[in-house]
View 1: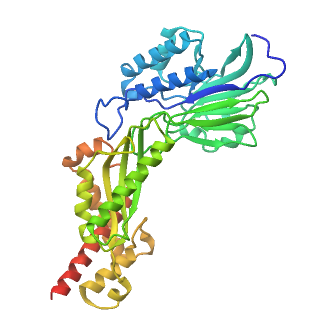
View 2 (view 1 turned 60 degrees about the vertical axis):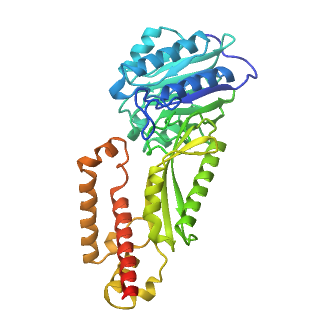
View 3 (view 1 turned 45 degrees about the vertical axis):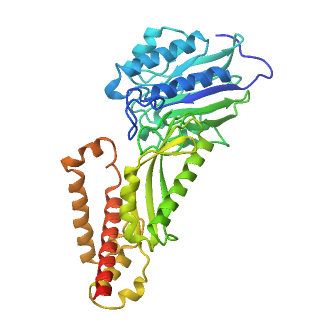
Length: 434
């Protein structure tokens, strides 16, 4: 091992990414559309690493989709590893996949290291001008818990150490405090698909880079890699690098100010334009934004909302701010603009429906425990109906594309509220005609 650098040295910079899941196509995106596949974003990450002159690329696991490890993943990883190794840029990987291990073995370069296979610590020094400037200590395990990790002793205090972990999510639920007392500058961990800086400041940085490219609506927000900088004294910081070309998100549109369906349509268009502009500013690489549009509030335009929702669902590709906004789902959580208190004080169908509407509320989860037995029975029957509808064969394509993965109770609450509002609106119209 080379001798450590004596005196002041420049910080070490690592590009950190995880959860590539190569071989899995993104949900709710046109098949084969250029730039949306994970391989394109992996190539962009390599471009960034080389252009910025980082000291190493660190990958924290789940590089290959489980069902497609021998096809797309192998080719993409082979090209990535060879390209960076030929450029002299080290690649350090923590992953439990046999497919990844085979690619590393085939590349056969000392600059491409897969650390910690077999639940043993391995380390890879990062060198500069023939001197060690950083030590990456890696562990790859499906079930290791942070409190059980036999972290290596005898660390050189003159060379900062960064831990690289790939493990099951539950390995860190109760072990974060234990990780932060170990003598490292940072922990880079494969932990779920959501990017997160779990700890920083007083103690080691703990970073979960999340998914490089989001692949389903369950992975909302900005994604990409992180640029981690480790100073000579071991202080570590992380900066998000938004490389993802896809963005999933939910946009709420309050229709309280809409007097007509045209007003509601204009509010939706303005909300989508604002959403696209915010994405473009924060994540300039994004070319497609997949949106779930939630229509909320009490509105005088209630009667036209269902038709508007159907229109928005069919108008699936809306160009905004230089990117495509795809409205793939519209959730209607609006109610008529009514004085429920006044209507509930009367008798008959209108009063009964007004009182039920007030008990159900306008948004959020239903507090079933506080409802009367008759209301609880109604909610239970509605839940069974939604569950049965989700399992119908006609909806199988939606289920396969992840569009029926939303919370069952939340969908039931929304549908029940809308139906009660429609009935109340119809009862009022009938009462007026009478």
